[in-house]
Image 1: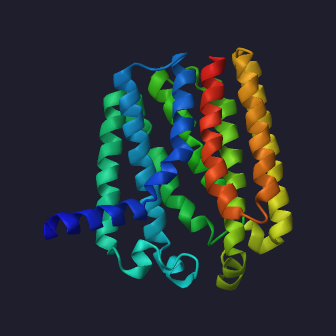
Image 2: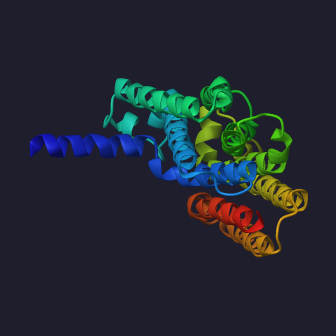
Length: 285
């Protein structure tokens, strides 16, 4: 019984360490890319491998972020109760989680197609580089967007298994980059004072909350325009327009509350955004 309780505690700590629930951001966009690449839902086996690679990649990305930022998290009042700063996990455990996720990610990529295995290091490199960007530039939000924009490209490549028509995923890729960069600015408003004091770079720390949120809104306007262009490019069916309208409403809601409820705008509303994009693609294709 004691062993079972201890194991349960470790698993809860590991799940909290990698914020497993945040997979809801990237997974729908990966599936959207896969549907575009396949011209419909991929076969069940391939779909399972895509989901496995997506979740493992997401775990690895967050693990790198938490390990690299452990000392910063310890000094930040908002984050000092995360697993590593409060001592609920040791660094070696974090690296073990990252290594296990990395093995699953590589194995799944190899099982999908040789081209996926060959290109699999690219997202990993971006996952490692991103956490350091906030130490160097206020454009770190774009770095996160670039890392996350590998999601639709990966889904598309897994389904198409070729680079020949990769440009067809371009609008979804650019949407992902702008969407994530925008909501990362919203998230960063919660650390505006700490970032400024600690010498870390973010748009809220550099420009102040109001101007940073205006920049995030501009990014999301452009992101929505990318989805409209995707609708035209793919010749999507008219039912997709209803999902586009819902997305427009969700973006408006997000920025109406971002100044007062940044965590709600960042997590709940953006979690819904990914699924709306997925169903827009499903309805269109």
